[in-house]
Length: 452
Image (tube, rainbow, N blue to C red):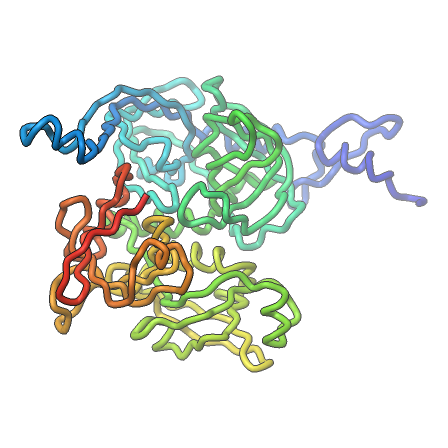
């Protein structure tokens, strides 16, 4: 076509590659700029990406089987505890130069006794852990250093598939490394990596050690925190995943304000919108979150949501799946009011919902353990016979139902530890014991159910 470059040439130019016989060609990367190199952007932002090295010891607990305890007698301990030293490497991003705040992945610093941050100029500083959130795999660190360079947040909700992306991190401990690619997909979930999944997928090379590093746009703004790869042997095959910047920002703000993540809860059960469901309810798209049940006394119930609603947007941004909805809501924080776009009875409408706090409302049990999927949990009230965590709903043929849980069961203990509320239950299960034995109060009986 006259006046246009062939597709291959255009792509090569977009990546900054030489193309012959075209001369002095340039691709506009930034607003009002014409450059054919990413070097100016990288030079500006690279001081804002740090290398992280951690050391510590991991405690492993092995529950001794009952026959062994019987054989060796009452003096035999119930479990064996071992401590093993470890060292690990990762990356981080400076998000506040004045205060010295650095964001990274929780799995980079988990169980660390010592966290060292190395700047691009080689200076090393010991970092303090301010707070972390396992379910979203985010941790906030603080370092006492001067003349730091921070990276500005982008609005990750404005990303489009095909946008160019730059990844900066510390792969394999080699030191700061820059790779480029595009945004391959948005709203990825179901990867069995973290509990809250709403990943940006990119083909920019991401390897071990890139975790916690920056995924940037061509203006040098942070669009995501690199966190996972998909590939045999842990190597790069062009499929990497990053936590969206908007989620990261929300979580960091909560940690700074409260010292913890105060997770927001909508109070609905549901699933992905299949083509059959969409046709049944007269909806012409397959993107959205289908609501199968609205939990009693939840934020959703108070706002008037109904079973059969299809949630299609949150604060004006499209919702692609139920997993994306759950991840976004859970990282927005309690007491925040959001606007939901709904499809109901052939019409679109909007409702405002004020999210409740996770430990004050029913939650989805699969955020704690996969064998609890299909159950909804809530703290017991004054009308319940004992204090604990009540099973308010169990979906038929779900993993929770197959585990033996029933509606109105009350969890009063786990592995012989007393459970009085959702926080107790969460802390015990997040310790990842090899076996989870739930002590259940069912009517007048006390029983045990074992999850694996």
